[in-house]
Structure formats: structure tokens, C-alpha cells
Image (cartoon, rainbow, N blue to C red):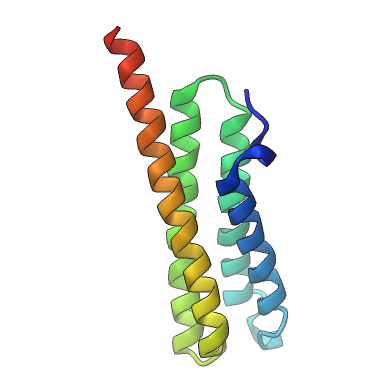
Length: 125
């Protein structure tokens, strides 16, 4: 078990979730139970799954929860594209959030690869 708050990827994912909440507070009221809720849920799911993976036993569980977080980051990415294309999210806000999301996805991909590689090395010895 490790402290998720020490992971750089968790901190970046948490910052992304905070930014999504701040920016979506400007979304139209009629989207509160639609797109606003969806993008907030998927963005919050990223750091939550990293945290849950840290609380599980073993590298396999950790890698699995990081992979789930990666899926949630991709879902967030789509919701942001949808909000932009519906003209609910401005181009500048979209780009900032899209850049953050891409960074988190890259970090998660590398982390999952590293954890799986380390697991393979341990089983090969």
C-alpha cells in the first residue's frame, strides 16, 4: 500500500478534476444533470481510481485501477470535445483542459507500463 498523494500523476489528475469543476460551474443550468455531471464524474474518477489502486494489495491491482483511471481520462477527453463542439466550452478553456487531460493520460500509460514491466521481471526471477 502506498500514499497516493505522493504520486505526481495523482496530483495532476486531482488538479484536472478541480479545473473541470471550476470551468463547468459556468455551464448552462439545463446541463447540470447532463454534460456537467458526466464530465465532472469522469474527471473525478481519474484520481479516485489511482487512490483506490494505491489502497489495494499488490502491483496487479494497482495497474488495473490505473488502467481504469486511463479509461476515465479518455471519457473526460470526449466530454470536453462534446462541450466544445456544442459551444458550451470556449476554445481557450477547452485547450487548457485538453492539454491537462493528455498529460495525465501519458503519465498513466507510462505508469501502467512500468508497473507491468516490474511485475513481469519479478515473476521471471
